[in-house]
Length: 190
Image: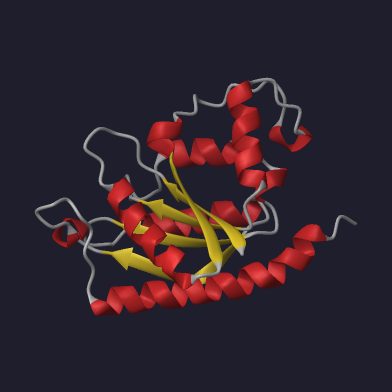
């Protein structure tokens, strides 16, 4: 089984990202190919980048960075769950990405985005570009939710239609394929 880290990007009070992340985490567990861990940046609470050395050196001084590095290093694949703030993904996610360098490399990444009319797709596109610079491979398959508040029921659960569920299942299927393929590249230390 592959280690899948699902990272929920929002941190502000009243956020809905964690219930979207919980929904995709449950589907990923049903896939049967992943050991799934959900990482909520709102609970992780990384400070703004405070390491004195560039992340490419992996010479971390702070315990929170060392723990973050170990958590990301053990991953084989990622799903980023992101809202859209001002046509981009949230700053806490950018901060979390920029804390590290080598740990992200040669791993596939899928994106679940949500928002208003654009369904978070502008944030997803910005995120894809940044993931590539970290040597991650953002896969083409994604899941996007326009007016996502309509997917939240009275019990504060995220409920999706069959089309979105099928899109998510296809995304997970492709994530498995990319994880298998990139594993050989990741393990090649030359």
